[in-house]
Length: 622
Image (cartoon, rainbow, N blue to C red; front, top):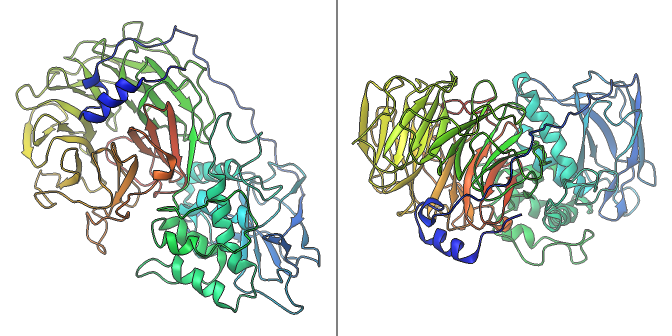
Protein backbone atom coordinates (compact mmCIF):
# COMPACT_ATOMS: atom_id res chain seq x y z
CA UNK A 1 0.00 0.00 0.00
CA UNK A 2 1.42 3.34 -1.07
CA UNK A 3 2.22 5.84 1.67
CA UNK A 4 2.17 9.59 1.19
CA UNK A 5 5.58 11.12 1.68
CA UNK A 6 6.40 13.75 4.28
CA UNK A 7 6.75 16.49 1.68
CA UNK A 8 3.19 15.88 0.49
CA UNK A 9 1.85 16.03 4.05
CA UNK A 10 3.70 19.27 4.74
CA UNK A 11 2.33 20.78 1.55
CA UNK A 12 -1.24 19.62 2.16
CA UNK A 13 -1.22 20.86 5.74
CA UNK A 14 -0.29 24.33 4.53
CA UNK A 15 -2.83 24.56 1.72
CA UNK A 16 -6.52 25.29 1.63
CA UNK A 17 -7.32 22.56 -0.89
CA UNK A 18 -5.56 19.56 0.61
CA UNK A 19 -4.63 17.48 -2.42
CA UNK A 20 -5.11 19.48 -5.59
CA UNK A 21 -2.84 22.29 -4.51
CA UNK A 22 -0.03 19.83 -3.88
CA UNK A 23 -0.18 18.28 -7.32
CA UNK A 24 0.28 14.60 -7.89
CA UNK A 25 0.14 12.16 -10.68
CA UNK A 26 -1.46 8.93 -11.64
CA UNK A 27 -0.94 6.65 -8.69
CA UNK A 28 -3.54 4.01 -9.41
CA UNK A 29 -3.03 0.26 -9.45
CA UNK A 30 -3.42 -1.95 -12.44
CA UNK A 31 -7.03 -2.77 -13.28
CA UNK A 32 -8.57 -5.81 -11.72
CA UNK A 33 -11.86 -7.54 -12.30
CA UNK A 34 -14.44 -6.10 -9.91
CA UNK A 35 -16.02 -8.58 -7.60
CA UNK A 36 -18.49 -8.48 -4.77
CA UNK A 37 -18.42 -11.23 -2.20
CA UNK A 38 -21.70 -12.98 -1.67
CA UNK A 39 -23.04 -13.55 1.81
CA UNK A 40 -25.20 -16.62 2.44
CA UNK A 41 -28.60 -15.90 3.95
CA UNK A 42 -28.85 -16.37 7.72
CA UNK A 43 -30.26 -19.66 8.92
CA UNK A 44 -33.90 -19.69 9.97
CA UNK A 45 -34.42 -19.29 13.71
CA UNK A 46 -34.77 -22.49 15.68
CA UNK A 47 -38.07 -23.27 17.37
CA UNK A 48 -36.37 -22.74 20.70
CA UNK A 49 -32.91 -21.59 21.68
CA UNK A 50 -30.96 -21.25 24.90
CA UNK A 51 -28.52 -18.62 26.13
CA UNK A 52 -26.37 -19.43 29.13
CA UNK A 53 -23.69 -17.45 30.89
CA UNK A 54 -22.81 -15.47 33.96
CA UNK A 55 -23.30 -11.94 35.24
CA UNK A 56 -20.21 -10.19 36.58
CA UNK A 57 -19.43 -6.83 38.14
CA UNK A 58 -15.73 -6.59 37.42
CA UNK A 59 -14.15 -9.81 38.68
CA UNK A 60 -17.03 -10.55 41.06
CA UNK A 61 -20.02 -12.69 40.13
CA UNK A 62 -23.43 -11.16 40.71
CA UNK A 63 -25.88 -13.42 42.46
CA UNK A 64 -29.60 -12.79 42.55
CA UNK A 65 -29.59 -10.55 39.45
CA UNK A 66 -32.73 -10.65 37.33
CA UNK A 67 -31.95 -11.52 33.69
CA UNK A 68 -34.48 -10.64 31.00
CA UNK A 69 -34.22 -11.12 27.25
CA UNK A 70 -35.77 -8.40 25.11
CA UNK A 71 -36.61 -7.99 21.44
CA UNK A 72 -35.95 -4.46 20.23
CA UNK A 73 -39.00 -2.27 19.66
CA UNK A 74 -40.14 -1.17 16.21
CA UNK A 75 -42.02 2.07 16.89
CA UNK A 76 -39.08 4.43 16.87
CA UNK A 77 -35.77 5.17 18.55
CA UNK A 78 -35.97 4.46 22.27
CA UNK A 79 -39.26 2.59 21.94
CA UNK A 80 -39.99 -0.13 24.47
CA UNK A 81 -38.53 -3.53 23.75
CA UNK A 82 -40.65 -6.64 24.19
CA UNK A 83 -39.80 -8.96 27.07
CA UNK A 84 -39.28 -12.38 25.50
CA UNK A 85 -39.36 -14.34 28.77
CA UNK A 86 -42.64 -14.64 30.65
CA UNK A 87 -40.66 -15.32 33.81
CA UNK A 88 -37.21 -13.76 34.11
CA UNK A 89 -34.73 -15.95 36.04
CA UNK A 90 -32.29 -14.82 38.70
CA UNK A 91 -28.61 -15.70 38.73
CA UNK A 92 -27.50 -18.37 41.18
CA UNK A 93 -24.81 -18.03 43.82
CA UNK A 94 -22.14 -18.36 41.13
CA UNK A 95 -23.72 -15.70 38.92
CA UNK A 96 -24.97 -18.25 36.39
CA UNK A 97 -28.12 -17.84 34.36
CA UNK A 98 -29.89 -19.81 31.63
CA UNK A 99 -32.72 -18.57 29.44
CA UNK A 100 -34.64 -20.68 26.94
CA UNK A 101 -36.82 -18.80 24.49
CA UNK A 102 -38.73 -18.94 21.26
CA UNK A 103 -37.76 -16.44 18.56
CA UNK A 104 -40.56 -13.87 18.21
CA UNK A 105 -39.47 -13.20 14.60
CA UNK A 106 -36.50 -14.02 12.40
CA UNK A 107 -35.58 -10.35 12.13
CA UNK A 108 -35.93 -9.58 15.84
CA UNK A 109 -32.85 -8.03 17.44
CA UNK A 110 -32.32 -9.44 20.94
CA UNK A 111 -30.56 -8.02 23.96
CA UNK A 112 -30.06 -9.20 27.54
CA UNK A 113 -30.45 -6.96 30.57
CA UNK A 114 -29.35 -7.94 34.08
CA UNK A 115 -30.60 -5.81 36.98
CA UNK A 116 -29.98 -5.78 40.71
CA UNK A 117 -28.26 -8.53 42.65
CA UNK A 118 -25.29 -8.89 44.96
CA UNK A 119 -21.87 -8.16 43.39
CA UNK A 120 -19.93 -10.30 45.86
CA UNK A 121 -20.60 -8.20 48.94
CA UNK A 122 -22.15 -8.90 52.33
CA UNK A 123 -25.08 -11.30 52.41
CA UNK A 124 -28.39 -9.57 51.82
CA UNK A 125 -26.92 -6.87 49.57
CA UNK A 126 -28.98 -5.90 46.51
CA UNK A 127 -27.52 -3.17 44.29
CA UNK A 128 -30.62 -1.63 42.72
CA UNK A 129 -28.41 0.68 40.64
CA UNK A 130 -26.74 -2.27 38.92
CA UNK A 131 -27.96 -2.64 35.33
CA UNK A 132 -25.81 -4.40 32.73
CA UNK A 133 -26.57 -5.47 29.17
CA UNK A 134 -25.35 -7.44 26.19
CA UNK A 135 -26.61 -7.01 22.62
CA UNK A 136 -27.10 -10.56 21.33
CA UNK A 137 -28.20 -9.69 17.79
CA UNK A 138 -30.51 -11.31 15.26
CA UNK A 139 -32.85 -13.91 16.70
CA UNK A 140 -31.52 -17.41 16.17
CA UNK A 141 -28.30 -16.26 14.47
CA UNK A 142 -26.22 -18.05 17.09
CA UNK A 143 -28.09 -21.31 16.52
CA UNK A 144 -29.78 -23.29 19.24
CA UNK A 145 -27.36 -22.28 21.98
CA UNK A 146 -25.08 -19.39 22.87
CA UNK A 147 -22.91 -18.24 25.76
CA UNK A 148 -22.98 -14.60 26.84
CA UNK A 149 -21.09 -13.07 29.75
CA UNK A 150 -22.89 -9.92 30.90
CA UNK A 151 -20.63 -7.34 32.54
CA UNK A 152 -19.47 -3.75 32.25
CA UNK A 153 -17.50 -4.41 29.03
CA UNK A 154 -20.52 -5.95 27.31
CA UNK A 155 -22.53 -2.97 28.54
CA UNK A 156 -20.13 -0.36 27.17
CA UNK A 157 -19.87 -2.10 23.79
CA UNK A 158 -23.65 -2.47 23.52
CA UNK A 159 -24.50 1.06 24.67
CA UNK A 160 -22.00 2.87 22.43
CA UNK A 161 -23.01 0.90 19.33
CA UNK A 162 -26.75 1.26 20.04
CA UNK A 163 -26.80 4.69 21.69
CA UNK A 164 -28.96 6.30 19.01
CA UNK A 165 -31.65 3.63 19.44
CA UNK A 166 -31.84 3.62 23.24
CA UNK A 167 -34.12 5.28 25.75
CA UNK A 168 -34.27 4.84 29.49
CA UNK A 169 -33.27 1.26 30.26
CA UNK A 170 -34.46 -1.21 29.10
CA UNK A 171 -36.04 0.64 26.13
CA UNK A 172 -34.30 0.05 22.81
CA UNK A 173 -35.83 0.19 19.35
CA UNK A 174 -36.04 1.76 15.91
CA UNK A 175 -38.69 2.71 13.42
CA UNK A 176 -39.68 -0.07 11.04
CA UNK A 177 -38.15 2.02 8.24
CA UNK A 178 -34.72 1.80 9.85
CA UNK A 179 -34.51 -1.91 10.60
CA UNK A 180 -31.28 -2.01 8.57
CA UNK A 181 -29.64 0.67 10.68
CA UNK A 182 -30.60 -1.14 13.88
CA UNK A 183 -29.30 -4.46 12.55
CA UNK A 184 -25.99 -2.89 11.53
CA UNK A 185 -25.63 -1.27 14.96
CA UNK A 186 -26.13 -4.63 16.69
CA UNK A 187 -23.50 -6.15 14.39
CA UNK A 188 -20.99 -3.45 15.37
CA UNK A 189 -21.02 -4.68 18.99
CA UNK A 190 -19.02 -7.74 17.93
CA UNK A 191 -16.14 -5.47 16.85
CA UNK A 192 -16.00 -3.82 20.25
CA UNK A 193 -16.31 -6.82 22.56
CA UNK A 194 -16.24 -10.61 22.69
CA UNK A 195 -19.53 -11.29 24.47
CA UNK A 196 -18.67 -14.90 25.19
CA UNK A 197 -15.82 -13.66 27.41
CA UNK A 198 -16.92 -10.15 28.36
CA UNK A 199 -13.64 -8.72 27.06
CA UNK A 200 -12.49 -6.08 24.57
CA UNK A 201 -11.83 -6.11 21.67
CA UNK A 202 -14.16 -8.42 19.77
CA UNK A 203 -13.18 -11.94 18.83
CA UNK A 204 -10.57 -12.28 16.09
CA UNK A 205 -13.17 -13.97 13.90
CA UNK A 206 -15.39 -10.86 14.09
CA UNK A 207 -12.99 -7.92 13.88
CA UNK A 208 -11.82 -7.05 10.32
CA UNK A 209 -8.16 -7.74 9.63
CA UNK A 210 -6.00 -4.75 10.51
CA UNK A 211 -8.77 -2.89 12.34
CA UNK A 212 -7.86 -0.84 15.41
CA UNK A 213 -10.32 -1.25 18.31
CA UNK A 214 -10.07 1.14 21.31
CA UNK A 215 -9.88 -1.65 23.90
CA UNK A 216 -8.19 0.58 26.50
CA UNK A 217 -11.00 3.13 26.24
CA UNK A 218 -13.68 0.43 26.48
CA UNK A 219 -11.97 -1.05 29.55
CA UNK A 220 -11.65 2.38 31.17
CA UNK A 221 -15.35 3.05 30.71
CA UNK A 222 -16.11 -0.41 32.09
CA UNK A 223 -13.92 0.38 35.12
CA UNK A 224 -15.86 3.60 35.69
CA UNK A 225 -19.18 1.70 35.62
CA UNK A 226 -17.71 -0.92 37.95
CA UNK A 227 -17.17 1.70 40.62
CA UNK A 228 -20.97 1.74 40.95
CA UNK A 229 -21.92 -1.76 39.74
CA UNK A 230 -19.52 -3.39 42.19
CA UNK A 231 -20.89 -1.45 45.16
CA UNK A 232 -23.97 -1.73 47.35
CA UNK A 233 -25.62 0.96 45.26
CA UNK A 234 -26.31 3.08 48.32
CA UNK A 235 -22.88 4.63 48.78
CA UNK A 236 -21.32 7.65 47.06
CA UNK A 237 -19.85 5.74 44.12
CA UNK A 238 -23.14 5.58 42.24
CA UNK A 239 -24.29 9.12 43.02
CA UNK A 240 -20.92 10.49 41.87
CA UNK A 241 -21.22 8.57 38.60
CA UNK A 242 -24.77 9.70 37.98
CA UNK A 243 -23.93 13.34 38.71
CA UNK A 244 -20.87 13.41 36.45
CA UNK A 245 -22.71 11.62 33.63
CA UNK A 246 -25.60 14.08 33.60
CA UNK A 247 -25.50 16.69 30.85
CA UNK A 248 -26.72 20.21 31.56
CA UNK A 249 -30.50 20.29 31.79
CA UNK A 250 -30.86 16.51 31.59
CA UNK A 251 -32.36 14.08 34.10
CA UNK A 252 -29.77 12.21 36.15
CA UNK A 253 -29.54 8.47 35.45
CA UNK A 254 -30.50 5.99 38.13
CA UNK A 255 -28.63 2.89 36.98
CA UNK A 256 -25.40 1.97 35.23
CA UNK A 257 -26.90 1.37 31.77
CA UNK A 258 -28.50 4.81 31.77
CA UNK A 259 -25.25 6.34 33.06
CA UNK A 260 -23.34 4.71 30.20
CA UNK A 261 -25.91 6.04 27.72
CA UNK A 262 -25.62 9.57 29.11
CA UNK A 263 -21.83 9.44 28.62
CA UNK A 264 -22.11 8.01 25.10
CA UNK A 265 -24.53 10.74 24.02
CA UNK A 266 -22.50 13.53 25.66
CA UNK A 267 -18.91 12.29 25.28
CA UNK A 268 -17.27 15.65 26.05
CA UNK A 269 -19.18 16.17 29.29
CA UNK A 270 -17.05 15.86 32.47
CA UNK A 271 -14.60 13.46 30.82
CA UNK A 272 -11.89 14.13 33.41
CA UNK A 273 -14.24 13.78 36.38
CA UNK A 274 -15.50 10.47 35.06
CA UNK A 275 -11.98 9.18 34.53
CA UNK A 276 -11.18 10.03 38.16
CA UNK A 277 -13.78 7.45 39.20
CA UNK A 278 -11.73 4.49 37.99
CA UNK A 279 -11.25 2.20 41.03
CA UNK A 280 -7.84 1.97 42.66
CA UNK A 281 -7.52 -1.62 41.41
CA UNK A 282 -9.38 -1.51 38.09
CA UNK A 283 -10.66 -4.94 37.03
CA UNK A 284 -10.38 -4.41 33.27
CA UNK A 285 -6.99 -4.08 31.58
CA UNK A 286 -5.34 -2.67 29.55
CA UNK A 287 -6.88 0.71 30.32
CA UNK A 288 -6.13 4.37 29.66
CA UNK A 289 -3.40 5.87 31.83
CA UNK A 290 -4.70 9.45 31.59
CA UNK A 291 -8.05 11.13 31.11
CA UNK A 292 -9.24 11.56 27.51
CA UNK A 293 -10.68 14.85 26.29
CA UNK A 294 -13.90 13.03 25.38
CA UNK A 295 -15.40 9.53 25.34
CA UNK A 296 -16.16 9.35 21.62
CA UNK A 297 -15.38 5.80 20.49
CA UNK A 298 -13.59 5.16 17.20
CA UNK A 299 -12.88 2.08 15.11
CA UNK A 300 -10.19 2.42 12.43
CA UNK A 301 -10.15 0.34 9.21
CA UNK A 302 -7.56 0.00 6.46
CA UNK A 303 -8.83 -2.73 4.09
CA UNK A 304 -10.44 -2.82 0.68
CA UNK A 305 -7.58 -1.13 -1.14
CA UNK A 306 -7.78 2.19 0.71
CA UNK A 307 -5.10 4.36 -0.86
CA UNK A 308 -5.22 8.10 -0.18
CA UNK A 309 -8.98 8.07 0.57
CA UNK A 310 -10.92 11.27 -0.01
CA UNK A 311 -14.72 11.52 -0.16
CA UNK A 312 -17.04 8.78 1.05
CA UNK A 313 -20.76 7.94 1.05
CA UNK A 314 -23.07 5.31 2.51
CA UNK A 315 -25.40 3.13 0.43
CA UNK A 316 -28.84 1.80 1.32
CA UNK A 317 -27.42 -1.28 3.08
CA UNK A 318 -24.97 0.74 5.15
CA UNK A 319 -21.92 -0.18 3.07
CA UNK A 320 -19.29 2.57 2.91
CA UNK A 321 -17.90 3.62 -0.48
CA UNK A 322 -14.68 5.60 -0.60
CA UNK A 323 -12.98 7.44 -3.45
CA UNK A 324 -9.22 6.87 -3.45
CA UNK A 325 -7.07 9.65 -4.87
CA UNK A 326 -4.72 6.93 -6.08
CA UNK A 327 -7.15 5.98 -8.85
CA UNK A 328 -9.31 3.37 -7.13
CA UNK A 329 -12.64 2.87 -5.38
CA UNK A 330 -12.97 1.07 -2.04
CA UNK A 331 -15.97 -0.48 -0.31
CA UNK A 332 -16.36 -1.54 3.31
CA UNK A 333 -19.26 -3.37 4.93
CA UNK A 334 -21.23 -1.69 7.76
CA UNK A 335 -18.82 -3.35 10.20
CA UNK A 336 -15.66 -2.35 8.32
CA UNK A 337 -14.93 -5.56 6.44
CA UNK A 338 -13.43 -5.11 2.98
CA UNK A 339 -15.91 -5.75 0.16
CA UNK A 340 -13.63 -4.42 -2.58
CA UNK A 341 -10.47 -6.23 -3.78
CA UNK A 342 -7.12 -5.60 -2.11
CA UNK A 343 -6.35 -2.96 -4.77
CA UNK A 344 -9.88 -1.57 -4.71
CA UNK A 345 -12.22 -1.46 -7.69
CA UNK A 346 -10.44 0.04 -10.68
CA UNK A 347 -11.18 0.97 -14.28
CA UNK A 348 -14.03 3.19 -15.39
CA UNK A 349 -11.65 6.10 -15.97
CA UNK A 350 -10.66 6.55 -12.32
CA UNK A 351 -7.78 8.97 -11.80
CA UNK A 352 -6.92 11.30 -8.90
CA UNK A 353 -10.39 11.03 -7.43
CA UNK A 354 -11.82 13.47 -4.88
CA UNK A 355 -15.61 13.41 -5.00
CA UNK A 356 -18.06 10.53 -4.56
CA UNK A 357 -21.85 10.25 -4.45
CA UNK A 358 -24.39 7.43 -4.63
CA UNK A 359 -27.56 7.81 -6.69
CA UNK A 360 -31.11 6.57 -6.17
CA UNK A 361 -30.33 3.27 -7.90
CA UNK A 362 -27.27 2.51 -5.81
CA UNK A 363 -24.77 3.46 -8.50
CA UNK A 364 -21.56 5.10 -7.35
CA UNK A 365 -20.26 8.26 -9.06
CA UNK A 366 -16.66 9.42 -8.69
CA UNK A 367 -14.91 12.56 -9.97
CA UNK A 368 -11.55 12.27 -11.70
CA UNK A 369 -9.26 15.27 -11.52
CA UNK A 370 -6.55 14.09 -13.89
CA UNK A 371 -8.90 13.09 -16.73
CA UNK A 372 -11.54 15.78 -16.14
CA UNK A 373 -14.15 13.04 -16.13
CA UNK A 374 -16.74 11.23 -14.08
CA UNK A 375 -16.75 7.48 -13.36
CA UNK A 376 -19.85 5.40 -12.71
CA UNK A 377 -19.88 2.03 -10.93
CA UNK A 378 -22.68 -0.38 -10.15
CA UNK A 379 -23.55 -1.34 -6.59
CA UNK A 380 -21.41 -4.45 -7.08
CA UNK A 381 -18.33 -2.45 -8.10
CA UNK A 382 -18.63 -3.02 -11.86
CA UNK A 383 -17.37 -0.09 -13.95
CA UNK A 384 -20.20 1.32 -16.07
CA UNK A 385 -18.47 4.35 -17.56
CA UNK A 386 -15.93 2.86 -19.98
CA UNK A 387 -12.16 3.14 -19.80
CA UNK A 388 -12.15 6.93 -20.16
CA UNK A 389 -15.05 7.76 -17.87
CA UNK A 390 -17.84 10.19 -18.68
CA UNK A 391 -16.77 13.48 -20.24
CA UNK A 392 -18.56 16.43 -21.79
CA UNK A 393 -20.98 18.86 -20.24
CA UNK A 394 -18.07 21.08 -19.22
CA UNK A 395 -16.50 18.70 -16.69
CA UNK A 396 -13.06 20.09 -15.93
CA UNK A 397 -10.87 19.35 -12.92
CA UNK A 398 -13.89 18.11 -10.95
CA UNK A 399 -13.55 18.16 -7.17
CA UNK A 400 -16.94 17.30 -5.68
CA UNK A 401 -20.17 15.58 -6.68
CA UNK A 402 -23.72 15.20 -5.31
CA UNK A 403 -26.89 13.36 -6.36
CA UNK A 404 -30.44 14.69 -6.30
CA UNK A 405 -33.52 12.59 -5.53
CA UNK A 406 -33.93 11.71 -9.22
CA UNK A 407 -30.37 10.47 -9.56
CA UNK A 408 -29.12 13.47 -11.50
CA UNK A 409 -25.50 14.25 -10.69
CA UNK A 410 -24.05 17.68 -9.93
CA UNK A 411 -20.30 18.30 -10.27
CA UNK A 412 -18.19 21.16 -8.90
CA UNK A 413 -15.57 21.99 -11.54
CA UNK A 414 -12.65 23.60 -9.78
CA UNK A 415 -10.65 23.96 -12.98
CA UNK A 416 -12.97 26.26 -14.92
CA UNK A 417 -15.17 27.57 -12.06
CA UNK A 418 -18.41 26.07 -13.33
CA UNK A 419 -20.95 23.41 -12.31
CA UNK A 420 -21.86 20.49 -14.54
CA UNK A 421 -25.01 18.40 -14.39
CA UNK A 422 -25.14 14.87 -15.72
CA UNK A 423 -28.32 12.81 -16.05
CA UNK A 424 -28.39 9.36 -14.48
CA UNK A 425 -27.75 7.89 -17.92
CA UNK A 426 -24.41 9.71 -18.06
CA UNK A 427 -25.64 12.23 -20.63
CA UNK A 428 -24.87 15.89 -19.85
CA UNK A 429 -27.96 17.97 -19.04
CA UNK A 430 -29.01 20.58 -21.55
CA UNK A 431 -27.09 23.80 -20.90
CA UNK A 432 -24.34 22.20 -18.80
CA UNK A 433 -21.95 23.62 -17.67
CA UNK A 434 -23.56 26.41 -15.65
CA UNK A 435 -22.32 29.41 -13.74
CA UNK A 436 -19.42 30.72 -15.77
CA UNK A 437 -18.49 34.02 -14.13
CA UNK A 438 -20.66 33.31 -11.10
CA UNK A 439 -18.52 30.64 -9.50
CA UNK A 440 -14.99 30.96 -8.18
CA UNK A 441 -12.98 27.81 -7.53
CA UNK A 442 -15.88 25.62 -6.31
CA UNK A 443 -14.75 22.70 -4.14
CA UNK A 444 -18.00 21.39 -2.64
CA UNK A 445 -21.59 20.88 -3.77
CA UNK A 446 -24.87 19.93 -2.06
CA UNK A 447 -28.41 19.61 -3.37
CA UNK A 448 -31.63 20.86 -1.76
CA UNK A 449 -35.13 19.37 -1.83
CA UNK A 450 -35.96 21.16 -5.10
CA UNK A 451 -32.97 19.67 -6.85
CA UNK A 452 -31.12 23.00 -6.82
CA UNK A 453 -27.37 22.90 -6.32
CA UNK A 454 -25.39 24.90 -3.76
CA UNK A 455 -21.67 25.29 -4.36
CA UNK A 456 -18.93 26.55 -2.04
CA UNK A 457 -16.54 28.91 -3.84
CA UNK A 458 -13.22 28.54 -2.08
CA UNK A 459 -11.56 31.30 -4.07
CA UNK A 460 -14.05 33.90 -2.85
CA UNK A 461 -16.44 34.80 -0.04
CA UNK A 462 -19.52 33.35 -1.73
CA UNK A 463 -21.71 30.36 -2.31
CA UNK A 464 -23.63 29.94 -5.55
CA UNK A 465 -27.16 28.58 -5.97
CA UNK A 466 -28.14 27.05 -9.32
CA UNK A 467 -31.71 25.98 -10.13
CA UNK A 468 -32.18 22.34 -11.08
CA UNK A 469 -32.54 23.22 -14.78
CA UNK A 470 -29.78 25.82 -14.72
CA UNK A 471 -32.26 28.60 -15.46
CA UNK A 472 -31.41 30.78 -12.48
CA UNK A 473 -28.00 31.33 -10.86
CA UNK A 474 -27.35 33.49 -7.80
CA UNK A 475 -24.23 34.27 -5.79
CA UNK A 476 -24.58 34.97 -2.07
CA UNK A 477 -21.87 36.70 -0.09
CA UNK A 478 -21.66 34.96 3.26
CA UNK A 479 -18.44 33.27 3.99
CA UNK A 480 -14.66 33.22 4.02
CA UNK A 481 -13.01 30.88 1.54
CA UNK A 482 -15.74 28.27 2.02
CA UNK A 483 -14.56 24.66 1.76
CA UNK A 484 -17.61 22.50 2.52
CA UNK A 485 -21.38 22.72 2.15
CA UNK A 486 -24.40 20.74 3.37
CA UNK A 487 -28.18 21.23 3.30
CA UNK A 488 -30.42 20.32 6.25
CA UNK A 489 -34.00 19.06 6.06
CA UNK A 490 -35.36 22.61 6.37
CA UNK A 491 -33.37 23.70 3.33
CA UNK A 492 -30.90 25.73 5.35
CA UNK A 493 -27.40 25.74 3.89
CA UNK A 494 -24.38 25.19 6.17
CA UNK A 495 -20.92 26.23 4.98
CA UNK A 496 -17.47 25.65 6.51
CA UNK A 497 -15.10 28.64 6.41
CA UNK A 498 -11.61 27.22 6.17
CA UNK A 499 -9.50 30.27 6.99
CA UNK A 500 -11.67 31.80 9.75
CA UNK A 501 -12.39 28.59 11.70
CA UNK A 502 -16.14 29.13 11.51
CA UNK A 503 -19.38 27.84 10.03
CA UNK A 504 -21.98 29.98 8.25
CA UNK A 505 -25.71 29.26 7.91
CA UNK A 506 -27.97 30.55 5.15
CA UNK A 507 -31.68 30.13 4.54
CA UNK A 508 -32.84 28.40 1.38
CA UNK A 509 -33.38 31.88 -0.04
CA UNK A 510 -29.75 32.78 0.66
CA UNK A 511 -30.33 35.03 3.68
CA UNK A 512 -27.50 34.88 6.21
CA UNK A 513 -28.81 33.33 9.45
CA UNK A 514 -25.52 33.11 11.32
CA UNK A 515 -23.47 36.08 12.56
CA UNK A 516 -21.42 37.76 9.85
CA UNK A 517 -18.30 36.10 11.27
CA UNK A 518 -20.03 32.71 11.35
CA UNK A 519 -20.52 30.34 14.25
CA UNK A 520 -17.33 29.57 16.16
CA UNK A 521 -16.16 27.42 19.05
CA UNK A 522 -16.38 23.70 19.66
CA UNK A 523 -12.81 23.13 18.49
CA UNK A 524 -13.23 24.43 14.92
CA UNK A 525 -9.78 24.53 13.30
CA UNK A 526 -9.49 24.81 9.52
CA UNK A 527 -12.91 23.19 9.06
CA UNK A 528 -13.55 21.38 5.81
CA UNK A 529 -15.89 18.39 5.46
CA UNK A 530 -19.40 18.88 6.82
CA UNK A 531 -22.47 16.67 7.35
CA UNK A 532 -25.90 17.03 8.96
CA UNK A 533 -27.30 14.26 11.15
CA UNK A 534 -30.88 13.07 11.61
CA UNK A 535 -31.55 15.56 14.41
CA UNK A 536 -30.16 18.43 12.36
CA UNK A 537 -26.89 18.72 14.28
CA UNK A 538 -23.88 19.79 12.24
CA UNK A 539 -20.73 17.62 12.12
CA UNK A 540 -17.56 19.30 10.90
CA UNK A 541 -14.13 17.85 10.14
CA UNK A 542 -11.21 19.94 11.37
CA UNK A 543 -8.59 19.44 8.69
CA UNK A 544 -5.78 20.81 10.85
CA UNK A 545 -7.27 19.78 14.19
CA UNK A 546 -7.39 16.07 13.47
CA UNK A 547 -10.83 15.83 15.07
CA UNK A 548 -14.47 16.90 14.72
CA UNK A 549 -16.66 19.74 15.95
CA UNK A 550 -20.39 19.48 16.54
CA UNK A 551 -22.84 22.42 16.38
CA UNK A 552 -26.53 22.62 17.18
CA UNK A 553 -28.55 22.71 13.98
CA UNK A 554 -31.68 24.51 12.86
CA UNK A 555 -33.93 22.04 14.74
CA UNK A 556 -32.47 23.12 18.05
CA UNK A 557 -34.18 25.71 20.23
CA UNK A 558 -32.14 25.20 23.39
CA UNK A 559 -29.30 25.70 22.79
CA UNK A 560 -29.68 28.05 19.84
CA UNK A 561 -28.62 26.95 16.33
CA UNK A 562 -24.89 27.24 15.82
CA UNK A 563 -24.06 26.70 19.50
CA UNK A 564 -21.05 24.44 19.95
CA UNK A 565 -22.05 21.03 21.32
CA UNK A 566 -18.48 19.78 21.36
CA UNK A 567 -15.87 21.04 23.85
CA UNK A 568 -13.11 23.48 22.91
CA UNK A 569 -10.91 20.49 22.14
CA UNK A 570 -13.41 19.07 19.65
CA UNK A 571 -14.28 15.38 19.79
CA UNK A 572 -12.71 12.22 18.42
CA UNK A 573 -9.10 13.34 18.58
CA UNK A 574 -8.00 10.08 20.22
CA UNK A 575 -8.39 8.36 16.83
CA UNK A 576 -5.24 10.17 15.68
CA UNK A 577 -6.59 11.64 12.44
CA UNK A 578 -3.88 13.33 10.38
CA UNK A 579 -5.72 15.23 7.62
CA UNK A 580 -9.40 14.19 7.66
CA UNK A 581 -11.13 14.86 4.35
CA UNK A 582 -14.53 13.21 3.84
CA UNK A 583 -17.39 12.65 6.29
CA UNK A 584 -20.70 10.76 6.08
CA UNK A 585 -23.28 9.55 8.60
CA UNK A 586 -25.06 6.20 8.30
CA UNK A 587 -28.39 4.76 9.37
CA UNK A 588 -26.95 3.54 12.67
CA UNK A 589 -25.65 6.95 13.71
CA UNK A 590 -22.03 6.11 13.00
CA UNK A 591 -19.89 8.96 11.64
CA UNK A 592 -17.43 7.77 8.97
CA UNK A 593 -14.33 9.83 8.23
CA UNK A 594 -11.59 9.35 5.63
CA UNK A 595 -8.02 10.17 6.65
CA UNK A 596 -6.02 10.64 3.49
CA UNK A 597 -2.37 10.36 4.63
CA UNK A 598 -2.94 7.32 6.85
CA UNK A 599 -4.89 5.34 4.21
CA UNK A 600 -7.63 4.65 6.75
CA UNK A 601 -11.31 5.19 7.40
CA UNK A 602 -12.47 5.89 10.96
CA UNK A 603 -15.91 4.99 12.30
CA UNK A 604 -17.10 7.04 15.27
CA UNK A 605 -19.50 4.54 16.78
CA UNK A 606 -23.06 5.68 17.50
CA UNK A 607 -22.02 9.32 17.72
CA UNK A 608 -24.73 11.02 15.63
CA UNK A 609 -28.44 10.75 14.94
CA UNK A 610 -29.05 8.24 12.09
CA UNK A 611 -29.78 9.46 8.57
CA UNK A 612 -31.43 7.89 5.56
CA UNK A 613 -28.89 6.56 3.08
CA UNK A 614 -27.84 7.13 0.41
CA UNK A 615 -27.85 10.91 0.76
CA UNK A 616 -30.08 12.22 -2.03
CA UNK A 617 -30.56 15.95 -1.76
CA UNK A 618 -30.91 17.21 1.83
CA UNK A 619 -30.54 14.94 4.84
CA UNK A 620 -33.58 12.90 5.88
CA UNK A 621 -34.37 10.81 8.91
CA UNK A 622 -34.50 7.08 8.15
